[in-house]
Length: 344
Ligand code: AVJ
Image 1 (tube, rainbow, N blue to C red):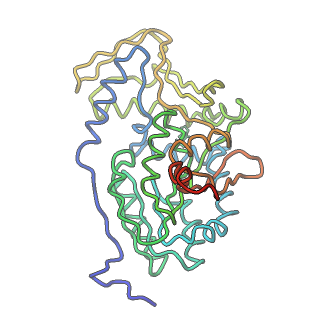
Image 2: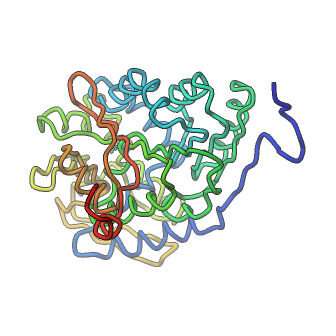
Image 3: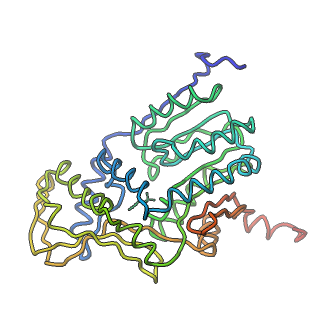
């Protein structure tokens, strides 16, 4: 067995890149998003402590299949993924409590290749707690936590120490509109060398009724989650929204193949975002878009991956084809193909 507490090679290292820019980003997003002709807020502001708790509840709802479907695929394919990637390190973007990650860590640990886990998450307590528990659970595992926003701090991910698997699970890539999605995938591709892979979760296009029910559950948990963003603005920016002034809306847009969540004003009213000295008027029935959650076909995902310089290695789905995990790697560059002698 290897020594675990060598001070020259510490088991746990945690870097924090939180610099107060989180608060600025909320203020900027509100100033920008609530003064547009079509009001909009980015979904990342849902997740304060209450929002994270509501999201955990969503994952347990009978209507919300993605979490269960993704876990089932992981359980089914973890050993194959471990063999295909031979990964010595797992880098996880938006690691949260690392609940699903254990399935992967187990398989990589079992295969004997796993050396390091690199969780990247904005929630400091989650990164610290999972570093602690995982190093206890997996003897010999080193954890290098990165506390930061994966949209801003990917350059803080440490250099690879061996074949690397980057995991971006849950279908969160669906929150990016198509252009930024490709840009973000290209940034992820920048973390990958020739021996590395990306494992990404994507929700799939399906019956709109099934999709809409997943985002508008009978118990109203998703409605509360949606309205929670207004409570975040009340607390963080001294706004005076009454969340009960808004109805929760979830609609599948078949042209864009994404779910949109909105908050629709029940009556004409003006709220004040006092920290920004900003009055915000809502007409009766006016809608504020709070999230897009894109749904994928294999063709669409291939297109996005290829635009980011990636190619599909495996496409894994659950038996009902509700959700997919894709394993991809950096594609041979077009220049390399063009400059080769054509033999392949
Ligand atoms: C965390 C972005 C994957 O889009 O399904 C769940 C968030 N929103 N219910 C999703 C969410 C409403 C979720 N992601």
